[in-house]
Length: 178
Image 1 (cartoon, rainbow, N blue to C red):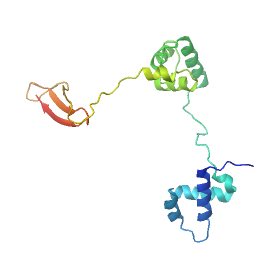
Image 2 (tube, rainbow, N blue to C red):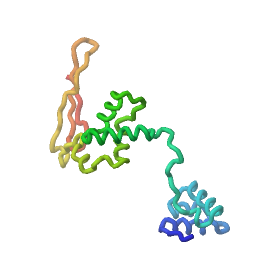
Image 3 (tube, rainbow, N blue to C red):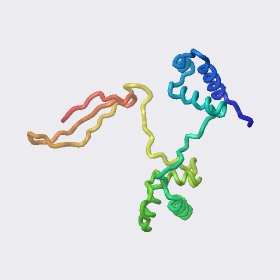
Image 4 (cartoon, rainbow, N blue to C red):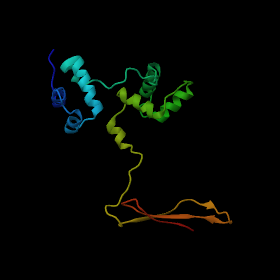
């Protein structure tokens, strides 16, 4: 069976060969190779059981996903999206609820479903950023002052908190109750 040996694979193989030597200091080898002792002993066990094949990279994908959206619901999402191309996750969720579907996924899950079924154009998505934070290039270029609502005082009257912050650092320079 031909294996493609990557640099990570050869490093694992080198580690296992060194660690398998009589009197080898596994902890010192772990520090040298930059791995945890848990990983080291896992590799040693796999190597003892399966030889070099035990050192190959394995899938980290879960064996089952109990909370994954049902295939029928995914199909409903995709079909509704094909009927209404401009709609996103929130609007599709609302429409599915209005149509009487139960256990409708969240808008973020609907967006993930659309992405998984290649129903989203990433270039189009980038045009619709929710917000772009404005920031001055250097500290003390611009300070922002803002009243943060109001609240009642125990002695009577109202308090209006004023905040002052540096626009570059987002550092609060002051807060005063007026």
